[in-house]
Length: 345
Image (cartoon, rainbow, N blue to C red):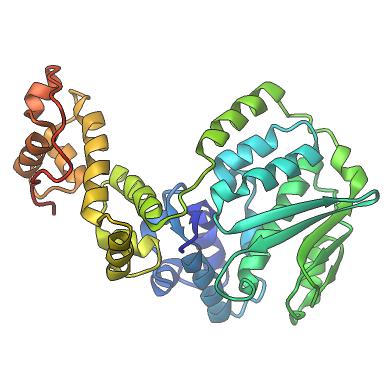
């Protein structure tokens, strides 16, 4: 199953790529990632595509610390709603626990285990993947981001006790010591950050408990990300359709697979891409059409129709009335899902 991650993780990729002599757009194409996701941080992309981009970038530039460079520029804002709820916790310990609790909302395949001891707290990173372990650059980006987040909560003078990385030592170990500010052990059993138990009690001056409670309720309502192919395709279709650029080829690009793979998995689930697209298109169409100031021609383009007339035919078949009648308040019973629809572009 394809794991997804919010494309916000690539917010600083162009800057970092150019700093090591790479053309970011060219590298994105090599990694088969959609260029549009650089401008839309909430776009879901395949974790496999992100990992491929990081490894290709490190190899092409010779920067073995490429993942750390990307983590160095990031922060809580890269994690969207998850970052917000972390920032509003009362203590560093509660913030780390919240980050562990909700990280999967940002990254399907990422998990943090927090083990509290009397003297030391160990935050262990787990990245799911087909390999026995995730590629090195992905580990550096993820664990480096966790370090930066804890540091931003505690203060830039904070340092962990130790950092463990399971892969073999890089050529420049000093770079890693400088980044983490502590002893870094390679060839370790796990990828983890060890910090003092005393650090967990540190108060966060900017925290607002009421805002934290509100955010927690909101994020709990959306935290269950789809696990099936049908659910993941539906999520990507919904996102791309809102941006006016949704085709099976584009969805396949975001899921790092081929259109045939999508069709095969959806058929096995008893559905089809056209059915998912039609359902999401219907939901979005009613929202857009309810705005009388929005031109129908623009709506047709956003929904992926070849012409306004094609959208009009589809709408009548789907909802049993014309768009004009709908805007006047007519709400007949929607046509069944298998009703004939117009051809989309």
